[in-house]
Image (cartoon, rainbow, N blue to C red):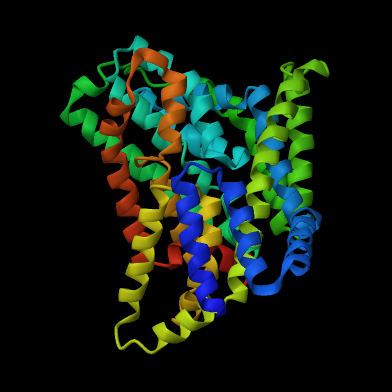
Length: 440
């Protein structure tokens, strides 16, 4: 059977498996094994799977994923999220919708040590939603704000999705991390501006009793002091990477250690028992991610054997259309797939096809990674998957329905689309910082 035919069969079988509810990691492994069996026979297929499993775990860069996950878990136990939120709320409390604005900036800041949008959503949901309920915030608006702001951890380093994208495409993790900083901050600012305008036009969304007294210099310093621990972690982790002291994996390990030390000095981590839950949570998350990673890499490697990526790249190069038309078509595919699949699955299915095309069209792969991550943020809050929305619902409980959260999501989704358009029109927003830190 021709390799291209086997590749098409594999794609159809994978989509059918996911449609029947097979877990994504298992679906990747079963479909890839069956199709490699058709191409190469049983023994080579088994060897191919074994090699993929080994390289998925043995590569030092993959080790950064569990360490960044653990760093975020330690930060949650150490109370970093609460300290960030308390400090930012005091600094923004004179603004309309101050609780929501503090949630946006707090999620962006905590995303710098979390790396997980679901963790961001869960932590800030527990902190913010009771306060928003106490001040009579519109529940749909409040839960949608928490779910949307949680996505900032997708873009702001150390984003787990950036690590996975880098490993699938053989790009620099450090350059991708740097490329995500300005788009992440820009998104938080657009969200805050949107909240400010919407609350001014419709005070029912956030009818809290605003506090108009200015903070004294001493009070402002207290707010900054609360947020100082996260500044230390960021300085050690990312200063180490861009100062040439650490690799990303070593930086993640250093971040874990610093977070643990800060938690001990603050008194939130005092005994081994305090670490049991974050260790268990990190192990469960890592195991789930690695199963998906093994399956996704296996599928990606099988797909390379089918010659479909090369054939498509050559076909597209022969089209007599502007390159932005092809780019637009690729982004539409990512947007639609984001509604039904998780990010790792999308990367495994599409990057072997699209990355050669993107490079052949002359687009920067680092910039493309940022654009894809922005689409992942949109996917995290749009139905039917919208994992951040489901997490916000789990935290909010019976106070708000899924339908109400999805109804409140669309203004935030519009903000993301505006940011996406700006990132596409002005690639230097993504590329300026990595070029400054690491050269062209």
